[in-house]
Image (cartoon, rainbow, N blue to C red; front, side, top):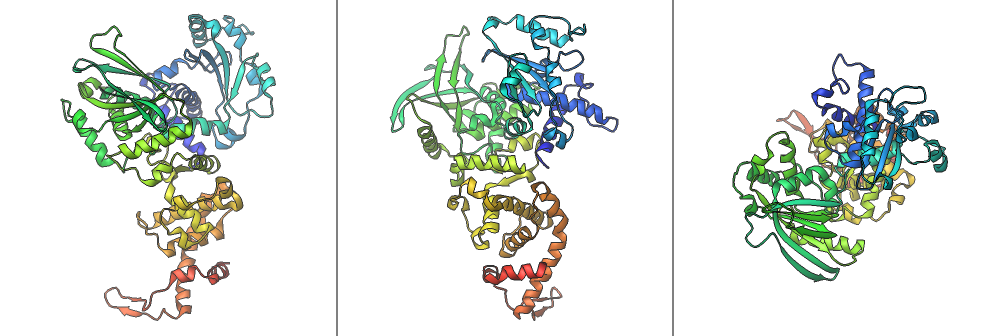
Length: 589
């Protein structure tokens, strides 16, 4: 599965989420669905994807409101009026229905020239051929005319298509003098696809949390200012409704866990997650406030307003929030919220609150001070699911760069933070076999670039001292990805919990050396094509080595009916010897 197939999976899930009243434009896959209908639905879903990621519009109907694509649309396929940034976005999209066209075929300048931006913004009702603009374009005109202080707004043209060999100034001229951004295929993968599968597509700037004061005898909060070696901070402690936390995490997902050393742990944190779920779902009363350790949130600025015109209500405002402890709690609540979003959420969450500790950095803390403070707090506060040492490296720039390189170059997902792809798996955007666990990657890297003995060592992620630039030299990273595919093939052919012995590593190393193709797009095909033949030859190779070593005389085992070795082969010594490479090359070639 390559990056384009991941994109198609996302688009098909968007189509699947369409309400029944949109079934003509977004038909589900069926025997009666022709290719053209499916391509048209995916083209519209592609615009949905942009609106979802860029503006955080989770609701399908709300996104559909802004899509104007159709007959007489004046070349504008969608729009969005952002009142926060005071920007009107005008979108032109050209989706290509196969990976080659999507990555190589460009939009023509004639298609861009067909965008009647100035005419539409000037209030014209018809295009130059006398065709009346469709209802969605007229809706755009009405909504712009109703914007207060529209004169302060700027306009930006978004082109969802490939367009090369044209300068920025020329592009602005072609679009009528408007600032223009191109989302080509690579931008799509990096800025739309990857954020969706990691659940980091929409970032919170100012977060508003409603607070219930009816059962708080001493006011809504306790505040305390502390001096640390990283500067002055303020701690605000209060109880907030679990419904509010569930709603926040449902919208912002892993983007609000950016500085957390790990993301949501689906399988690994199963016991903790189930306990959280049961406390919420099985109780009508507020045991949750007693049983749960709460959530710690980092903030740049924090405000509480108890004068909001509602009895027993207050509002907490948090600027640039990041949850650094309690991610499991928050994400599990969001899953309960998502599963019951069409039902009565009040019945589930009513009267149940969670402790929230907000740490506000008051001084001018630099980025490194912030990271060090976050790590210190994470170490001190995490109790429910232990933070392992490798988690603490997850946000290092090396890890971030390595993840980006592997996705951009190979289309695989390097899991630098445990659980960061859970959202993509949950929504069927990706399958688990696209994910490379961090320790496994470094095992493969050392197996094919260093030695089998080193590959078997523990905690390789800590001893690794090469930069990402060095890792890409001499095809070392390419070999590692190919080795991962060989490992995946071996594990499928055997038992799921494959034992990593010297023979397994040697098999991976030899097959990588023998079959690594020049074209990285052929990696999976080459592994699948050659694995069975190679495995047969490998077994003969091992057998003949035993005979040559004089140990294959064996003794008869009456229980199994087979001969078993009288002596064990010293594979450690053999695989580490200078003769091993010459022997396997001679045998296989």
